[in-house]
Image (cartoon, rainbow, N blue to C red; front, side, top):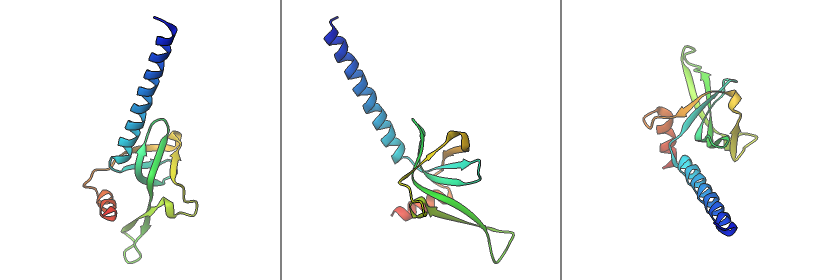
Length: 119
């Protein structure tokens, strides 16, 4: 096998792997929402990409507050990260600070709320 053939095979493999990576990343962005719970107690919801780094796009911060009328109950509020003072496009998460993460069921209250906002 000549050197030119080897170089051409390596270039084709790199192109195929790059295309596969981009397709995988695009599919992850089109999937449903995921939740990320951090060691700090913060909860984020958004489109989660886990490779090569943990990246949350289109994210929301889940805030929990006591109900003023009934202190035994909690109120939940989703605040878009884009409306925060620091307003990042995407949020890169340090894996060491993640307690757990996973996809939301389409039937969950958060997923239904976000789906209704999209429409």
